[in-house]
Length: 374
Image (cartoon, rainbow, N blue to C red; front, side):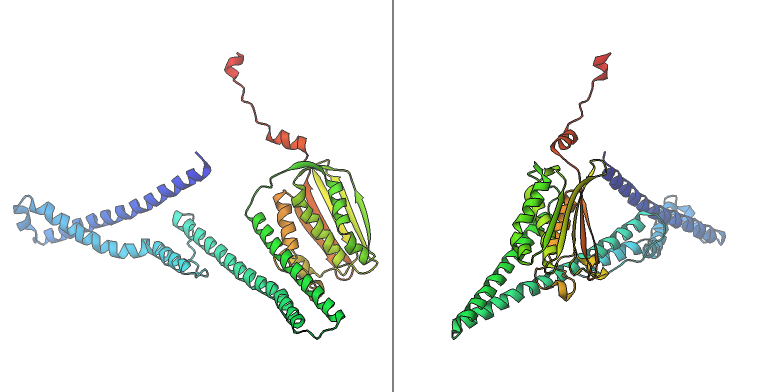
């Protein structure tokens, strides 16, 4: 039996005990009060006629117990069932979309207290999800609308005519640039949505991690060459077992950001090394660009967050959110250190995995029949 099943059984028994206790208190109280009232009436000689008929006394006692038990139930139910009534009311408000509702805290470790704690936690998570969803929609609408307005406006100007060749070429370049931005945004959103809904990275192969990073640097050659940026790769030879196509998004995004926010004749260092005795891989990407303040570094991995105006000149704020998710799926982590005007350092840590260690991990444990060995 699993731990979760055991917990469900405990909850079931706990609620049963709660109901049994309530019924027992009502019955015991009704019976005790009926006996006390009957003895008082008997002391005044008010029940002598009832004793004449043998079956009348149990019938009178039964009726009195029912009446008294019902009265007690009305008063006790308000006390015992108050938490359940509050829970019912809270659930109704949640179904109506009100995620701000919270139930009053009950002290102790009873099952009702746990249920209320779980409800409050659920409502808090739903409220956070709703706020995030609204924020996501607002940000996406804004980010999507901006390039669409640019494309529409410059296309309208081209249709009107009366422009010089230079103006036409400039407007066409803007339309192409904004269209590419829309394509990148759509691609990133689809990929990020796919990554957030999966827990395992598939299609793993054994590949040269240092060569993949080197190829990523070469893919961005046009961008860093245009700004005369010096890129210094110090890449240790590492064989890694993973999905190179998925991890390529990590390298391209981080190195691409370093190039984007590093000025003319800047310097970027890309260092890859195996640390902690073949247990972890560290990739460090350092630049001497514009840097970030502490408020930006704390939120840099959030969706659509682009930091201050100096860092929001391009992009859509999805790249680093995707990088963080891929790193987590690979069992790793990412951190950033930066100082305004002094550059930024990104650190990506991945658990060291190659094909041999992965196969060893997957190798089934063979059960040994000890009786056959005797």
